[in-house]
Length: 388
Image 1 (cartoon, rainbow, N blue to C red):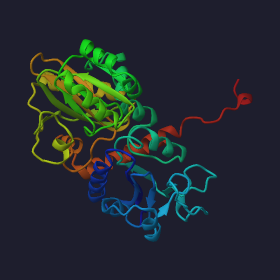
Image 2 (cartoon, helix red, strand yellow):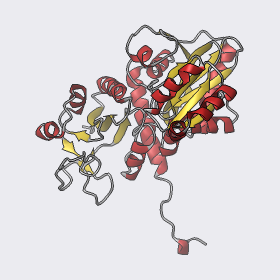
Image 3 (tube, helix red, strand yellow):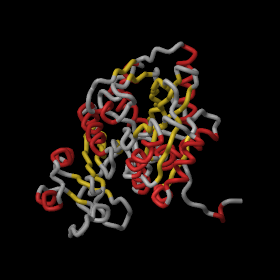
Image 4 (spheres, rainbow, N blue to C red):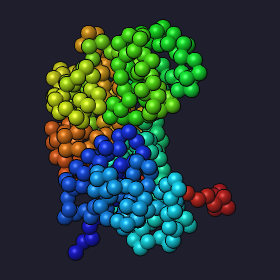
């Protein structure tokens, strides 16, 4: 009988999107084909402790993540990555069926798996950090690599890359938290001169609309920057697109990606904030988006262009702003690990485009294994004497 593919699903993490990650992971583990895959859940606490064994999802959703509780419950704690402040985590030999993350460290880290599905959103997960760890361990994983993950996560650098490829982005300024705290007056002047009001203020490195607010006038700017500065040292202030429609496209593939039909979000609030996304269930999703064929094709092509500009892999969701007033179209974000609950836009757009949720998980795992096999063709040694 053919052995099942062991899929490690990583979730949680040190991020403001921790709870969203738990919802994504729960959906993936519920929908994955159990006849084909053996799921290995891997949790990361808010403090950065890696949990394997037992039921990490239950531990994180139940809030039982203190060191004594975890040790008593039989979780395997990585002795290198998971040392909490003041905690005496036992060190020892790598437990059976665990792969060393870095050879020679005796770090338990990740159980022996064939491929990893990172369902981690935001910092310390979607930003290339987990991807780098998996590269060192030579483990195939779903989604973009280190570079694409890091660049797409930083909204300021993301916009620079998109602009360098001739792709449309909204005007913005970047504010350092240290500069703001030292003297806010020049920042206020720059925003008034370059951006104007209303404007959006957001952490450069976060998603799910965490820490984002809309400053309608100058007197609201200080509070907006103070909020964003709680989540990042780098803050983005963006020009508000007049009468913006929020359009999203899902992209799937490696070197030859395909784009889904576009969808449109009608927020239940003034803009699509965290509450509108996850709490009140009142936002409306229009799939496909009511667009003329020419605009729909243009948006899908721009989504693929952005995906290739970052050298993404596996999956990404590309978000657009379309002005009702001017007809202008802007790329808002490229999300390399988009929300993956059954009601999230990424899987819903593919469902409407002919790929149901369980099949989508299948394809992503296949793409991860395909990309890993392709990387194995690359030389990692150089023998000067044998090269003429």
